[in-house]
Image 1 (cartoon, rainbow, N blue to C red):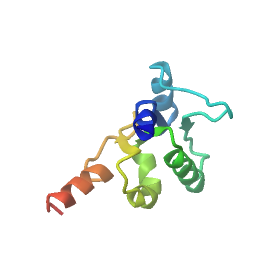
Image 2 (cartoon, helix red, strand yellow):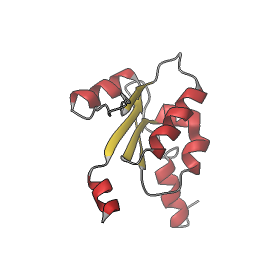
Image 3 (cartoon, rainbow, N blue to C red):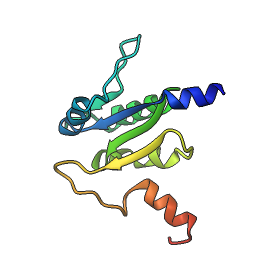
Length: 120
């Protein structure tokens, strides 16, 4: 019962470029917890792979994280960390950005489904 309550109160976390994150914030997705931690991270050219991966792992390990939305071109930079995540929660959703088109062949969820159905 406790886990069910956690899932119904789960949050969406966003890792993306400025346009993507601002769009989700305008839709009301943004939040800040009692420790001042937000559920979003804007990735600019100055943000390195290590910081992106650290943010991803921090979000993934939060008990209230139900979904992580990440721009696909950013996910490509930390593909190993994303592929190592095997649990259903949080769900990792890769989306396109304004600058980069979506490629289903790079999406980790699509790849896992193909493996499941023997379409490697």
